[in-house]
Amino acid sequence: MKTPLVEMDGDEMTRIIWAMIKEKLILPFVDLKTEYYDLGLLNRNATEDSVTAEAARAALRLGVAVKCATITPNKKRMEEYPQLTRLWPSPNGTIRSIMGGTIFRTPIVIDSIKPVVGTWKKPITIARHAYGDLYKAVELSTDCPGECTLLFQGDNGEEKTVSVQRVSGPAVWLAQHNLENSIRLFARACFRYALDTKQDLWFSAKDTISKQYDGCFRSVFEEEYENFRTLFEKENLRYFYTLIDDAVSRVMRSEGGFIWACKNYDGDVMSDMISSAFGSVAMMSSVLVTPDGKYEFEAAHGTVTRHYYRYLKGEKTSTNPVATIFAWSGALKKRGELDELPELTAFGTALEEACFAVLGEGKLTGDLASIASPDAGVTALTTEELIDAVAGQIKKRYNRK
Ligand code: NAP
Ligand code: MG
Picture 1 (spheres, rainbow, N blue to C red):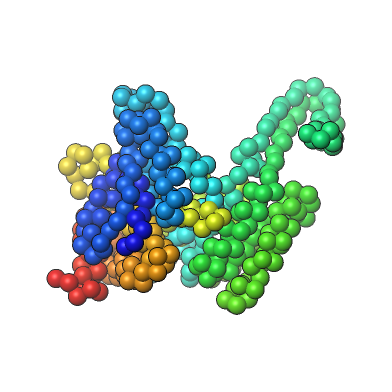
Picture 2: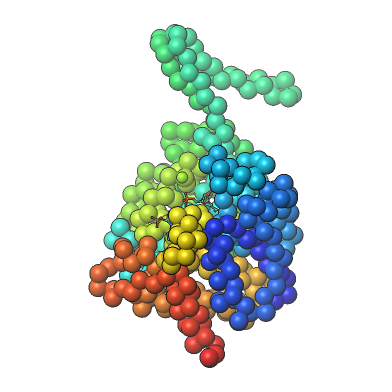
């Protein structure tokens, strides 16, 4: 390796899995270089959370990070960790606000887990816009008859006003916004990621109804596409816009294998639909991509608390490490690509192939064993057995004993 990866360690069961992955799947094969940041809750507390911001800045500086799942503390966690001086904010939120960018979530698909939708052959990646709309909206509820207006006051004195509605009784109101620049950066991230992963890009909104708001999303995507058109055509890739309801029906009839860019709320809902329909939350990978091409790879699931408490009692757990392994393989492949180290990229690919080989033999963790097709000849393994089996497959590929 030339440039180190930014390594962000985390909490609970995923922290245990993290250490196993490094020890058994990476260190024996890769001359690993990382800049290590411990984002475990206790270290975030000890550093007054400065470690999270430092890790995010390191990711911007070095370009590729890999992150373990972390606890976002709530009141209940205060009882569990009495030393906490504050309810520290979500590390993912902090990292996202420093790095910016778009999150792409992709299911990891295997033959023995059949998607609920029979036509889906390849994964569908959801790109969710992560700014504004409902998530930064203001609301109001009123009791008497009257009229609500929306007023914009420009700093230059310009004023624009529109009547929302005149009502004759109790009513509820909502105002939301988005920023043209945020939409533009989102569009660029989507076009770049489509080229990166060589997949078509779909974007959906409802501009027939929302002519200015969703119309702005549509036209910004169209404008930005002009900067990518030649590259798309060279790669034989397609970008198209369609209405959200049409997109839903096309997705259901598709074979998969494309990126579906969604507005914030649509992305929230559709990513849960896609991940559940593909099989398991434990098989969803996730990457944050900034507009200028910095990457943070992680698993989409959390720290799997219930399994951790069983682990602490000395019980064997069957926690699925695949999405966390794919966070590592994704980061190593990207580092290899950026630093022109084909062997490193090839190792990332070999790591993924090793996982597919093990899963393909029907060796699965409990979450998958329970939903696998009965004819798959399933053997349920513990976390460590599965990781050992993956290590065995990598050794085969590299002719090691
Ligand atoms: P979770 O850790 O994703 O686990 C929820 C349930 O999903 C588990 O109890 C387990 O079900 C199943 N599951 C998830 N991942 C699995 C895996 N790899 N293998 C097998 N089963 C898996 O979500 P949570 O319990 O809501 O959250 C726990 C902690 O994670 C919270 O403190 C939260 O703040 C944090 N979190 C972090 C991130 C992140 O860092 N990106 C994301 C989400 C949540 P069964 O128990 O039925 O087996
Ligand atoms: Mg959601």
